Image 1 (cartoon, chains in turn orange, purple):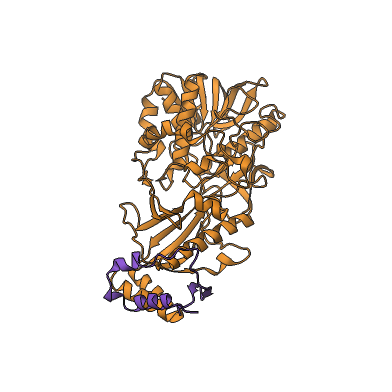
Image 2: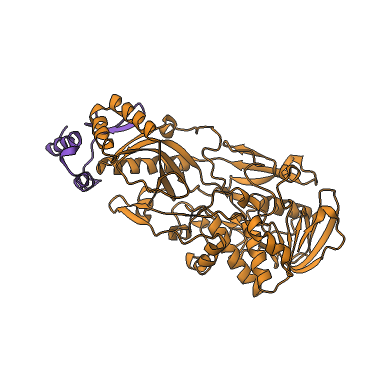
Length: 478
Length: 52
């Protein structure tokens, strides 16, 4: 059943087995899975069935540190959440993501990849994609692999709207903004939902799941914890801390003698990443290099440029280009960010939203390790091209500068909001345990990428859905 | 300093049409960490000795 809280609170069921807050990929997956297994669910969505400015306005906030896009355009606040404009790139996390990595040993998953693997096929099915092809080793000595993705076109709001309407087990309440939680100390008793007219209602459930997104999970936990004088979350937990992105920049161009695969969803591009051995040898975090084919005219321009700068190699490249062996590409590098205490979600002390809740203040800054990773990634790729006579790269000046990144639109931003309520074995290291239960409460859970202890290399949505299925499986047994 | 091998490699670049494309793919398998020449950046291009 769909219920619009803006129409009033009368008639709304106020008790269920589960109260889930947020209807993006995480919350929707948990809700649907539980409902299909006969459990009663109240699914609270802060926005409406469609996007609205009054809902989107609640996502405004401030980013302190590096350049970022406005937070109210970086995510969507209506049925289906940010899946309403996601890019759809789907791939599982690597084995390496779940291992301890040099330099941040305490930021590894307390679960293993094999704990998520049983949920892979079902997650792929929800995203309506097949499993991406296995990596292809392009060069053993350089440890360079080609990887693949699957492209999902699923918008969770559109996909599940009919099921939400017809389901007897789910009451999906739109325009229901979470404004508070009540706990008896160890057990959440109720959630308060408020509509845009300011009318509130209280929802009781046996279990509560917050699935508000990679920033809002931290913000609302911080706010509710503040309201409850710190009785909600274990005081040792690094709540809001270790927030991460996948920095990714267009770093230049290249003329390469590499096969650039065509796809049915995007311009031809080649996706490369390094083997675990190379990542360890270079002491870098996970990363990828994307080569996007550029138009023939631009390739000619690059060739002319190279001939002027370095005639010998330029002529070689031109002769191969005449045979369609060499092509011009844009070079894009993305990498996993080091999880840092200093990168965090904070409640603003100066600005509040219409419900009186402090707006978000996101402190985010890249570090020397980010720059070193980028430089090592590109140096290694260049070594490969030169050693194998596969081409030459032309880098933008800033890449090997000491500091500074270009400020241009969303270059450098992947819209991957991770961390803040990270998963760990203890409250000292994280906010949730290996079952996504908040340390300090026995029936409060977090779903979504805010539980990621590290970013890994994969786009996060598939992992979010896998984790959500795993959480639903756990809750079914609760 | 140019080695004879580098010189031959240069020839392969200049006259690629003499050889099949696969030559370029499989012909130069020096170990990447043992055969290096000086790298430098010129107008953004990352080049090595002999390129210019």
